[in-house]
Image 1 (cartoon, rainbow, N blue to C red):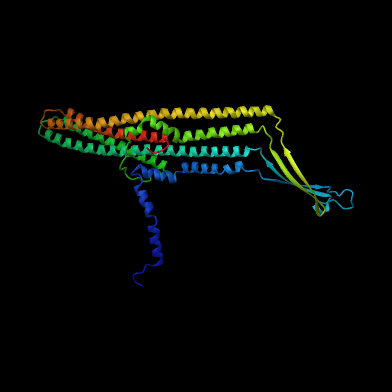
Image 2: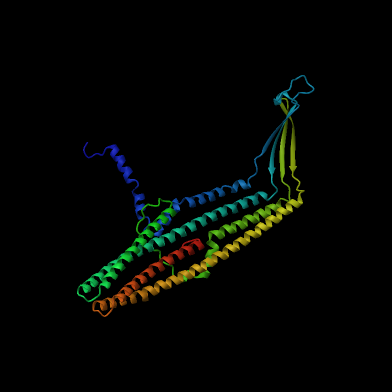
Length: 424
C-alpha cells in the first residue's frame, strides 16, 4: 500500500536515529571543560579501574569478620577388623567403628570485629586512591583545556594582527608609491607579516598537540575532533580563595589525606589485633561415633592454642606500633606538602589576576591609543615606520598577556581544586 514504510526501511531509520543524542554530545565535546569532565568520568579507563578496585576492597569487609568454614573429619577405626573373621574394609558399617568430628574455629572475643574494622579502613584507602586518581585526572583535563582555549585565542589574535599588518601595508605601499617613504618600510612590513605567519603556524601546531593531549586524557584516538572552546570557567572571587578557609576544606576533603587517615585507622586496628593475639583462639567440635550400623556414643571437643612465643609476639607488637606511628607521620607530611602547594597556587592566581587586570585596564588601552597616534603620525609623515611597528607589537603583547594570564589562572584553579578535592 502507498504511504507505508517497509519493515527493513523502518529498522534502518531506527538505527540511524538511535545514536543522535550521542552524536550531539560528541559534536559539543570540547566547547567547555564541563563536557570534557563529564565524558572522562564515564569513560576514563584509569579512573574506572581504581573505582572497581575500591568496590572490590569493599567486598572484603564481610569475609574479614566472618567465622572460618567448619571442618569435618572422619576417622575409620579398626579397618582390618582385627579380632573378627571379617576381612579388611573401609565401609563404616563393616569395620570396628567410625568417628565423625565436626569442628569450628572461634577466634578470641573481639578479634573478628578488629579484622572487620581493619578491612573497612583498607576499603576506605582504596576509595581515597580512586578519589586521588580522579582529582588528578580532572586537574590535567582542566589545565589542558585552558591551554586549548588559550591557543585558540592566540590563533585568532595572530589572524587579527595579520589583518592589521595588511592594513599597514596598504598605507605603506600608497606612501611608497608617492615617494613619501623609503622602500625599506615596504620590505619591513612584509617581513613582519611573514614573521606573524610563522608564529601562526607554530600556534596551529600547538593547537594540534593540545587537542591530542586532551583526547589522550579522554581515552579517545589522538585525531578525534573536538569542538572549538567557547568559554572558560569563572574564577572565584578573592574572598573564596582565602587560604584559611581552603586549608580547612583541604584537610577535610582531600582524597589523599582521606586515604592517609584510613591507613592510620587500619594500622590502629591491626595493632589492636596484634595485641589481642596474646589470647588464645578456640576450636570446638562434636563427634558422633558409629559402631556398625548405629551411633552409640557422642564426644565433645574443646581445643585452644597456647600463646607461648612471647618474644615473637612482642616483636610483632612493636612492629604494629611503629607502623601506626609511620602512618600518622605520613599523613602529616602529606598535609604539609599539600598546604605548601595550596599557598603557592593561591599566590599564582592572585598574580595572574593582577596581570590580567593591569593589561586590560591599562596596558591594552594605552597601546591602542599609542598605535592610533602612531598610525596617524605615519600617514602624515610625523612618525617613522619603526615607531608604528612597535606600537602594533605592544597591542599584540598586551592581548597575549591577557590570554596567558587567563590560562594561568585556570591552570592554578585546577590545581587548587585538585588539592581541596572538590569544585570551588
